[in-house]
Length: 287
Image (cartoon, rainbow, N blue to C red; front, side, top):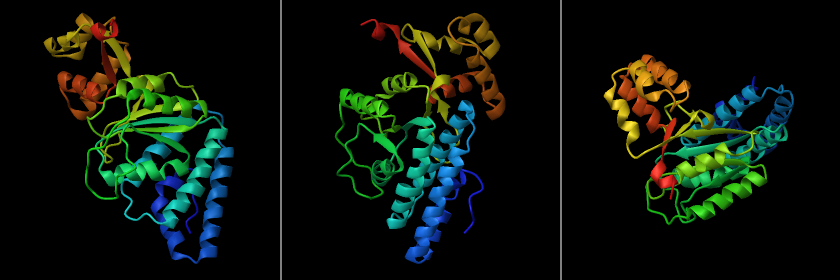
């Protein structure tokens, strides 16, 4: 067995380790599981108290786990065992060091993918919360309409999980509900022990947004469309953006233009799409 060289190997190589467990006799499978569980414990115990780096670590682990899970082709006792023993130990030890995550997923998910997340992530140590009532979903590559919980019940589930110090994996898979802005605020106000991230891109895209980087702007209806009058981030910032946005927004726009060869308008709209900028209608908030 290839022994892990770093903590992230436990998720990066999850398919390899599970396959190794399938190929061995029961007693050897248990030895592999115990070895990896002990590795997870010792590796986390040796982490330095570096808040920024540890948050990067749990973000990478969780985002990779989500992407790996979406490609699972077989769910069996070995998959279940690896998640419930090795990954549970990993997240338990991270929690003991006050390293937790609030992960918000806004992606289209088939029934089988949603059910997998609802069933497989709790044993790893997550409170998996979704407005979609998925207890009747089957492991089939189809998408069926579900009944949905009202926001008040979703909020209670999240707050209860936060009180218990649970890792949170929140899912919205379609447009039948839209609680995202409110859930982002719950994440924003959660304990600083939490890494707080938002993903609404496909699994082949590495882009993920940190909640603290989301710019929440109050505006009068449609005022933000003023950016369309300008052809460059410099002109927009000078005449419109300064005083309404923090400086990292024009910096992010400029960096995105260079990285993806986008126009100013395309880069601005991309940041809105991935919710790096959230606009809050003053008329709505005043009611």
